[in-house]
Image 1: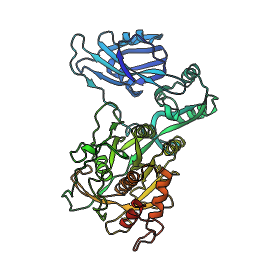
Image 2 (image 1 turned 60 degrees about the vertical axis):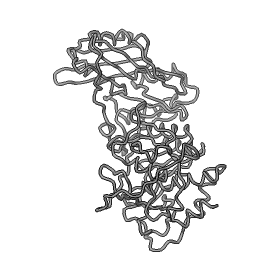
Image 3 (image 1 turned 90 degrees about the horizontal axis):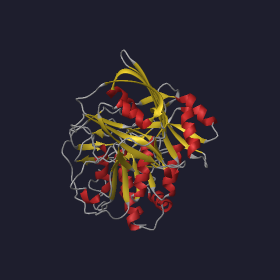
Image 4 (image 1 turned 120 degrees about the vertical axis):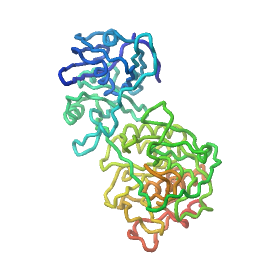
Length: 491
């Protein structure tokens, strides 16, 4: 929930920020409802950029950037920010964060205007997940962020004291999973903080906020002509496939198939797709485009979709954002969730989120990856996930598809698409296409078997798979070919 007001309320957060500019230094601390600042002739834009480091959206009139001198300790936050913005007009948006310890509030947005002239504002440059990514403790994660779960019974007052002690700030929460996303200051060490929290009796678990990367499709050379595109007539009914990917570009062919959308990278904004991958998966999952080698008469039924943008334009996202997106998908009726991204590191929180999703009756489908390493990737290798390898147009395992014991099946992985990936339309291949097609077939099964559970659907799928294909390099991977699809959908 968000609402706008002038500063006259307390903000229950804890923050320590130190910044070093070319010739000046400053310190800014927020503890509970108190603000401390030591700054001399620091541009206001640089001070507010530190708020943005903690997830606050900041926009300013680009004609103003006064130098700020402020030296005070533990001043009431409303009065403190009023001092910072004394020469400007301003407005704040506050965010209510729900969680096991109760409702908390934090500043979500700061708007700074030239006095008496409220023309459109310019947002401060956002820090992308790619820029914020670090490699530490053998994992790729977002710098200065951790995920935390409190032990049952922890009160709000105890949690606020913990934030003060560890100099961390609540950025967001997922009530259904009991998780908080916290920011910690740049001078803190991730490993030391995690060790400190592990010893605290109020903390159930703390982990880094892992980074996940999308799987890039491979374009076939010499094919630039879009294939056949069906205009779907599904009007938001029946089982839906949620597509957690790079986003979605509206299309007349898909208009009636879309049940809901979400841009998790910029909540509240219309969904977009800067690279095209998510839109490609929407064409496959909905049935507007049929992969190569698939019997088009068998693939005629449309499927509703829920496109969710989880990736930035570099194909990077965080575990927390993905878990939020899954909750959105479940709350909007998704029976199948398609995932074309991964990490070589496992996460306890993410594993539990997958279990929660399965308990709510969804089937989880994940691409196995487009590098033939044989090594597991997550979430594809997690228990209960249908990890999908890709078949080439001739029905053999694609030579760039990943494989291994965690892979459950191989499906058609090439399609002639009307939307390109960072380029023109044409024929693309990859385990992403194979996963989206598999998700589509499972959703079709739920259409004809609406009372079936996820366990029953997966069992019927496994029984229908073709286990003795010809000419395949890895015979241990069964196929979701035309024969298997026919057997599955007619059970």
